[in-house]
Image 1 (cartoon, rainbow, N blue to C red):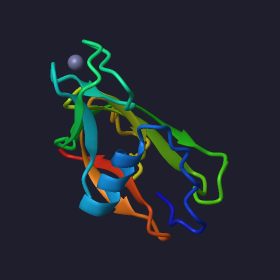
Image 2 (cartoon, helix red, strand yellow):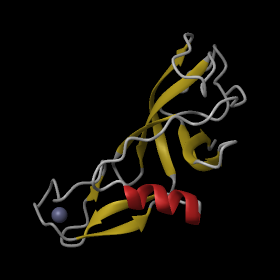
Image 3 (cartoon, rainbow, N blue to C red):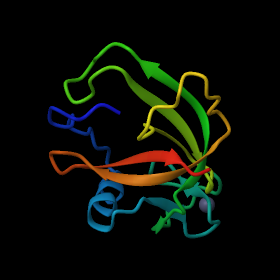
Length: 138
Ligand SMILES: [Zn+2]
C-alpha cells in the first residue's frame, strides 16, 4: 500500500457501529457482535440476530484469521488518503462474516492469492484512525 498522505475519510457510522471502532482503537483488536442466544456472529452489526432473531448480543473478539475470497487493484484514485494503485480485498473471517478491507502488502501480479490464509493486523493511520487490514498468514 502507498503511504498515506491525507486524512482517513470519515466513517459513516450506523446505529450499531460504535463498539466495532472503539475496540479497534482502544484494544487493537476486532470485536464483532455475537448472538447471546445462538452464538451466530453478526456483521454488519444490527438490532437482531439473522439466525434466531434474538436481540441479545455481546461484542466478542474474533481470531483475526480468515481466507482471502477476492481482490482487485484500483488504478484510479478516488480519495486523497488512498493514492492509486491500491488493493481492495474480501476476507471471510474464520467466524463466518465477510469483510472488505486491504492487504498491507500488494500481492505480486503473478500470485494467485484467492484462497490464501490471511490474518488481521490493526493499522494506525497517520491521523490516528485504527483500520482493520490484512496480511498473508502463510
Ligand atoms: Zn441468534
